[in-house]
View 1: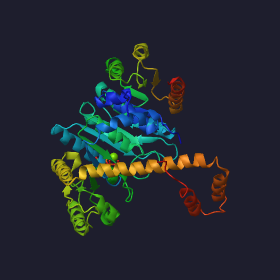
View 2: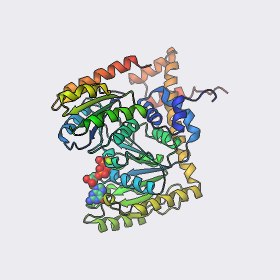
View 3: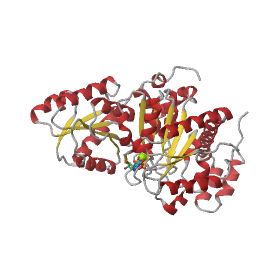
View 4: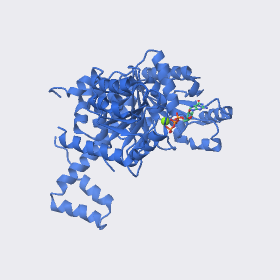
Length: 138
Length: 322
Ligand SMILES: Nc1nc2c(ncn2[C@@H]2O[C@H](COP(=O)(O)OP(=O)(O)OP(=O)(O)O)[C@@H](O)[C@H]2O)c(=O)[nH]1
Ligand SMILES: [Mg+2]
């Protein structure tokens, strides 16, 4: 049993009301030894940023449907920076058109998982990032 | 203790949310920086009213906490919440679902909500829950509400932690209301029947009332009469009365000296536990360097000496340096 579980926040910004995918991911992360918190639906970037800070998660996984993601995703990244959560791994998921991906990455998202990404891929990505953090930590 | 304050401790005392959140993380993860910070925070604790919410799984504890937070905010108080959910014994991971029901407060800067996995603890809390409570107390939250994981019956660590323990029941448990063992009846400072919109609420209230009459007096001789309240957390009904009862209990504790006494007794127990762990560790380290005692330890392992006599032998040799 890992002594220091990786903590992950799964968040749904705006009008995205699909919960099946996030439930599957939550269970997979739990089974991989992580502590998972779900924000529920219809969150604003402010709510997600506050939650991520209060919960002091390592990872914030956000999904946002096309409407608004170009505004919401960068805004969340900026708020996290401002509130002292700039060290967290930010990843995005859901339906993000190819042409928007570079801007989202530039805003601070380390990876964009497309709809239906394999949960093992997500777990590996998080674990690899975390292992790198541990080795570079003071 | 002199010297500079742990920087995050200073920030947390000044109310910086990210700092307090990180301290809780350190304490939870057993990072030594957490303990160092706690030393600095400690003089700033002891002010918050600590409220425990416990009851069976699915009783509506999180929904009740959500409603309580709303009412406390109406009254202008800043609120910290710690919600404990069970960790998986297999993976060590957890889905921390309590927060989901309180998320409408996420944009409110006067509310701090933290989810914790039980991480192998069985008493309804996690090992670091009390430490996290201290952090929120030092950060200046007026109320710190702790939701335990859904408890069976005897797992009542919360009683030693909180000033006021609220036991949440629901209608329709039928004979299982017996699940409220004598221990629980003694432990509660306030009893709530949630989901009072459901059939059978009256019956549950009557049963509880009866049990409260039969309740043995609080071992400390406290003359508090625990109130019994019906609430509908989903609609906020009865919540103002519950906050009134909590306030009433807090002033009762202040008047009787119980407010400090409960915290003090918690600190005392924590101290004893730390002493037990630390002394055992230190003794074992030193003892193993002495062949005669190493032999004693080995004799216990190979069952040639019973553990009681062996421990007595070793304990008899402990002398504190003056
Ligand atoms: N009818 C009714 N349902 C309620 C009430 N309060 C809570 N519920 C429902 O009861 C269910 C469980 O609520 P939670 O608040 O998650 O219960 P809990 O005790 O925190 O659950 P665990 O943390 O898993 O032990 C949810 O579906 C709530 O909507 C109430 O007053 N009336
Ligand atoms: Mg709950």
